[in-house]
Amino acid sequence: MPVPSKVKHAKSGPRLAAVLLALALLGGCGFLTGAPDPVPGLSMFTDVPIPSEMEVDQKKSQVYESSLGRVGLLRASGRAEVEAVLNYYREAMAQNGWTKDSEFDNGDTRMLVFSKAPRSAAVSVTPGWISTDLEINVSAKKQ
Image (cartoon, rainbow, N blue to C red; front, side, top):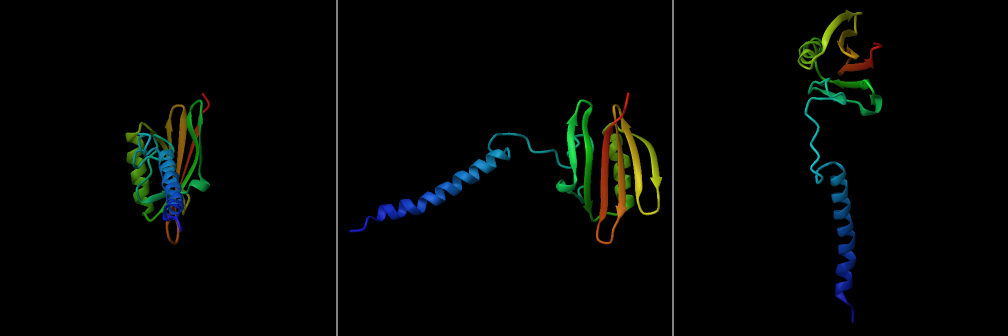
């Protein structure tokens, strides 16, 4: 005489494992731990925002914590007009305490350079066929 309960337990085992795995993964994301979500519009640099039209390329970006704050290179792209992105950074960087030091235009690529002691940030915007490329280089300034 077959025992149906063994069949049910065998099928519920993989389901239970899948549920536990999903809960563990969600817990690692901060969902169950109560960790706050990242602030929308901010990048890996806490004081350098990213326009909502741009998507950060995590594989081509490298940001790390130094004794002078977060530094590194962030790359993103998206469907936005170059001038709109530049205007966004002129306003948003000032709101985050950065001072615009200079602006360059070498034909295709446009660059804004900002400072906020003890760091500097170079924001480069380049138009492409399909999307606009954004590169933000934040570095520590020698005192």
